[in-house]
Length: 84
Image (cartoon, rainbow, N blue to C red):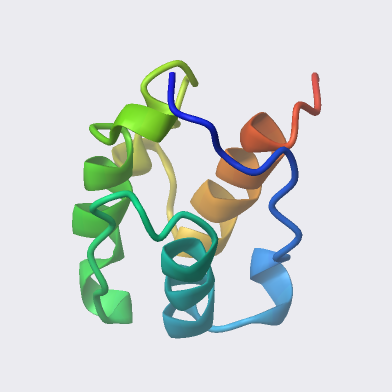
């Protein structure tokens, strides 16, 4: 597994998708994370699971979430090591 930051401090409920997506790119710049608009958030979310840095994480399936904020919140909790 690639060396990724141990904490991703961006709260999805207080940002736009474009900000959240941009912060992902800045935090994990060595990974091929695409930039997309809000309408295409699921495309980017799906591609994150395919990156080497996140291959060891159970990246949530975006099709199970009604909006990007709920998916991004779950993703952030997983990456940050919060166990439910």
